[in-house]
Amino acid sequence: MLVYTTNTGLIAHINDQKKTGFSLGFVPTMGALHKGHLSLVRQALAANNLVVVSIFVNPTQFNNSNDLNKYPQNLTKDVELLETLSKESIIVYAPTTEEIYGNQISADKFDFKGLELEMEGRSRPGHFNGVGTVVKRLFEIILPNRAYFGEKDFQQLQIIRKMVELTQLPVIIIGCSIEREFNGLAMSSRNSRLKTNEFDKSALIYKTLQTVQTKFKNHSIQTIYEWVENQFSNQPLFELDYFQISEVESLTAIKKKSIKKTYRAFIAVFVRDVRLIDNIDLN
Ligand code: PAF
Image (cartoon, rainbow, N blue to C red):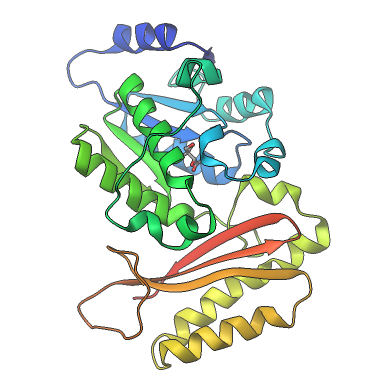
């Protein structure tokens, strides 16, 4: 499998492959690949002639240096995993920080029309400027026809859609459903940092969301919030960072349902210093 660490090598390879009707898929990642990423790559392979998978731990989207330093990294293992899907139709782009940022490691400022102020934006100030900066730069380098993002990071997916709408970059954004561990926990690179008992008990996160989905039909929003807070308040292993029921376009929290709108429930939970997020469709 070809692994490029510079833009010039990558771009030359892509240009070489381009012919009429050629379609380029792109799966941006921070490495530590798991089945969730592989499912994005599989979907990209099914719809495109060539797929670029970027592996880059983006420093500007971490507001907590501890989280950045502990982020799992293993390029050799990632490449081996991707090779199980295809050796010829996938190329890996694993740039250095200098290649993306030069000697100025800083994020651009975006106006995502309020999407960035909700949930993750509140808990991780500056996070979405970092995500927007790196994804925009990667889109500009790779020029993909389609880019694939997991719905586990649903807020990120909506923000990328907004960025593409505002910048008019010619890329189609595809949201892909959440892949789960056997116990329901949403797949995440961070899961590898959980001890066995923490992993087992973290099944509570998705179980809670499933019950929320049921309760949403006939309980008030207020009752659901109280119920979720209760679920976590008597669990010493967990610290609930936020729980929010939002309308999916604006991501703003709702107090009442309207029949014409679509809603999702979002949750972020700390298990020690490991922060886990998940969400579920409520309609
Ligand atoms: O979802 C991620 O892994 C990252 O936020 C992304 C999109 C690769 C940008 O660094």
